[in-house]
Image (cartoon, rainbow, N blue to C red; front, side, top):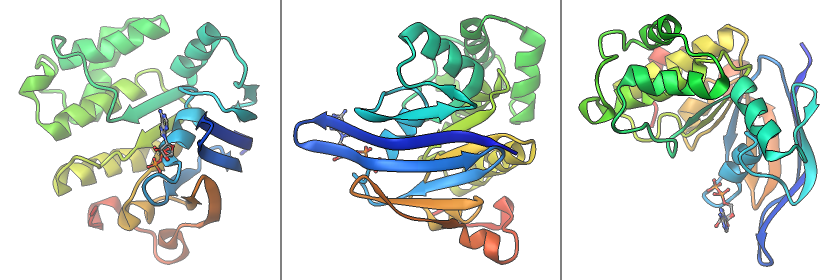
Length: 237
Ligand code: ADP
């Protein structure tokens, strides 16, 4: 398996006094599940946004699946992201007046192919086959999060980026989302997630810790060094 994500000497300055990332370099291999941890303000979301092509670095570059994405024009970047990256971000709200099915189909539309049967299949996979006609306001938080996951998976992206995927969820829905992410990893997707939870990070293969915009540790997850952790058996807080 080759390198899927390469971050090379990335610096991110938001303004003259805010250096959010201070020379981050890391390589993530295809099929790896990586957790990014660190205190609030350490640069986790900034790093995820830069790896997701949502933001660009001030210095350094990002290479995804062999493509140097830093410096690509906006249109090419959007196309690359749609085809290669699934985003499970809380800020990515669902469109309130569209049903679950239509929200998923909208993601298909943006990437060029609309296929209702496939959209239904993906909603089925996340356990929402019976909720396809509901608008977000008529779905629970956990169900909305699963629609977001379905939307992220619709184009079978090679890379999945998740920002606090269990953040606003109760324990049962959190476990369900983690179980879905574990299946994605098993299917060969490369998964990067930001989490504040040691228990969630223990499910990953590897944990990278940031402090003040720098990588301070990068090691096999504690969950990988002992008995394999099962998403269903873990507390998510
Ligand atoms: P984390 O996700 O670890 O909490 P962030 O990546 O959100 O950290 O933030 C890293 C630093 O960059 C913080 O000091 C934060 O205040 C700052 N920051 C984040 N986003 C912006 C922004 N859009 N404009 C200015 N400063 C920002």
